[in-house]
Length: 135
Image (tube, rainbow, N blue to C red; front, top):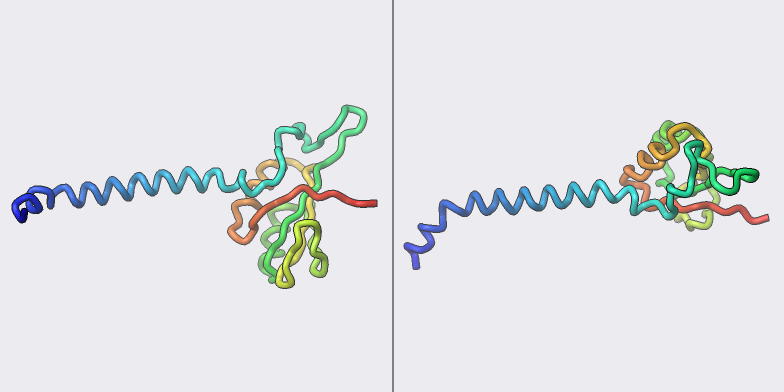
């Protein structure tokens, strides 16, 4: 049996490299799709201007998400998305925790899809949901 191990020994580094390569490729693929999984709505229903609805009633899609209640996170998200308004004492429909701030933004802005992708890439943003305003 020891001779069999010695025959397989040269393959171990190759096997380890193969496993690591497959794992890396798979994890990169999942990471690429993670931003899409964080969005609770379909961007394909929006036009090039970030608007939705009938031609005579186009409107922006409003969205909300939570961030940790720290100034550096407010600075980062508002730098990415100029439409954001941060509400420290509001939970929103998304139900931000006591140590989180609610952020509300909308898609009526240049490059809205890239803005949402950038927000979704932030590790501290768990999900971004469509926001509805009651009257």
